[in-house]
Length: 496
Image (cartoon, rainbow, N blue to C red; front, top):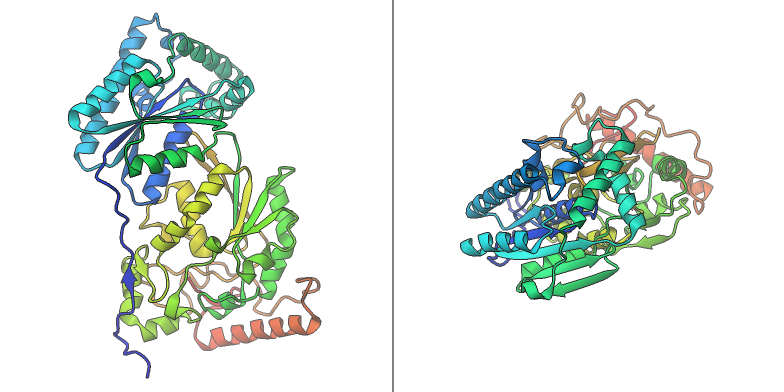
């Protein structure tokens, strides 16, 4: 006999423990060395791992009084400029110490902190409160790299909004020269914990690491680079399980999924151009089939496989709600931590994706073709989406998402194929028995309910009989959807 309807089948993932350390990560380096980009990435990475982290950008405090200063403001002989910059640093450190007192774990003090005197003062403030200091210095002596960073990052800085790009570059180069007059690189004589990243990580120097959390932060920074690049994300094409409303499994693509696979090279080319990219997929058939026509170097990752639904694998949400009503509601209550019996939670997926994120940070241009839950976790990392919101994000089928990390955020672009697909989005606390007329059921509507007439060449290995079988199953799934009272409108039924 099956389990009683009210049996609880779930477990909950536990927030990972870190040591009790409270660490001030002090950025060090001349302007245009990627400090703000590194600071942003550290915060994003730690928050993604459920570690309370926050960046305190001294420039943001300074802009409250001087929103767009010219290079002369940063001249060492400018007494008033020096006073205002010191006041901004003091305000940032004061807020940071208050945040630590409220339970913060890792603060990033994002500024040049270019002299020994400034670093000594910061360490003294932290030592007085019992907080650790980890100094992260980004050094770059390659003029081409520096100029590239100035052009791609600093011309979009809040200091230069609305200004002529050429004038902004000239002024910023003058600002750098002012800082170079007093800049002092970190040395062993300062007797502090530090990591020094030289020329975009081509050389790394580490000194006096004290604990696990510091080690984790340093290891992450060692995998970073600050040169411009992009990430392309796509779900697999519509699968037979998508059509049938089932979760999990290792299903083949539907006819429309194969059509998306054929259209993908042209869709990607619009965004990628002549850039060289590496293509990653999961080990599941639907992602491999989707990437089949893309002529880039390919790599399969087991870590990119879809969230394991455990005992619910192969079921529809309607069946899950019927068999496990208590758990169906419990998952909506805390979807990030909810773990399927014999399966995974979103938190578990994040844990196994950590090596993937490291490789993405180390690499250049990468495209990832994978699954909804996995893409939600990856997207949440790059876009700094809170954990409780990430499992509820809509990542539509037949869409390529381009993400370009910048110093002050991540730029997003979306490219949608003109090929209909089911909507696999289910709103929080929405019954699986949604019925016709629901928002999700009509979300991607517009295509005819019949299977597409043109299926020639949708899969190189597919025989005519196999294609006919796929079409027949798609039509049958449409009929089943209608019988179950679910709106079809060309997008068939709705799953998560």
